[in-house]
Image (cartoon, rainbow, N blue to C red; front, side):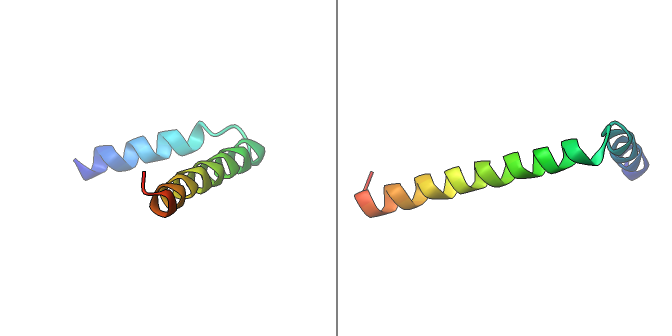
Length: 48
């Protein structure tokens, strides 16, 4: 089971075409996290 998991990880890493798309995905992830925490803080302060 773990062998299959590591095989899937290796194949997904090989599918990344270049570093620029990885940086783009990383910035999109950070933007999503900021939006998520901003929504949590907004709801906390305004009791939604």
